[in-house]
Image (tube, rainbow, N blue to C red; front, side):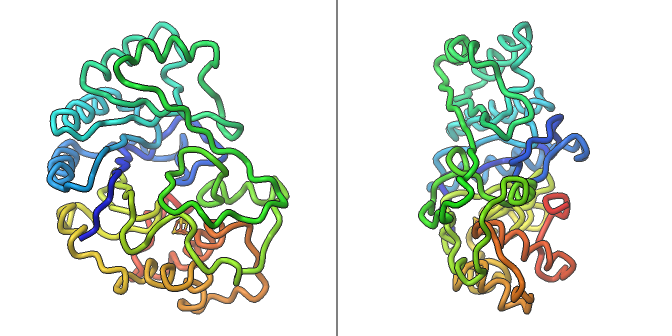
Length: 300
Ligand code: SF4
């Protein structure tokens, strides 16, 4: 049985911002769809019966777009002792009048951590001079500043981040971030260099991601099941990496093996990092519906 420690619950894919590093292509063009409350409550109950899980993180898109929903989600998770965190761009907290009531409403419900995105790729960031006020208002919850940074263009890709969440550090070039490869003039490397996944133990990932349509992903865009067809616990107990058409080759030989095993011609190609290659290959495989890659909105 998989034993993840953190579950990222994407309440919505919609976001008023279109940040350049977004791994899941969220933005103003995404549908303003939110995970339904029945699915969410059932998911949280199942998570609470999974002893390995230490925390849930509500994210998006921008979770503050559906603030009342977010509040209920935090309350439910706190009642189940799931140490709820919220990950936001901080857009809705930029208004100094609205910010205190937004924060109070979540802290009252049992919020433990607010993760605030920053960094050079954001379309807009929370004002630095108001950070200490935000921290004070959050008490007893804590504030964590997340920032993805550009990789120096000539640096060798990092292969040593297994289990490290994508909260800060160098950006991985997947989703919308894949477009940065060209604008930043990133060095491109031979596909055979990418013979391992640098972030995830594909046999037993430390984190899983659930999207608003109920897909449970081991990495955004690589689903291993859907909550409309199976319970969360059933997905964890039945997953076998050897039977998964994407995770299995990734485990055996990284994105290089993913391309080779699915017959993708990479003889003329080169990539900035493993995630850039993995994402590009998966995009080429999207039309093969039997592979279950998706949802499509993460790839367009
Ligand atoms: S995009 Fe591929 S290589 Fe990168 S972390 Fe995800 S599964 Fe691993």
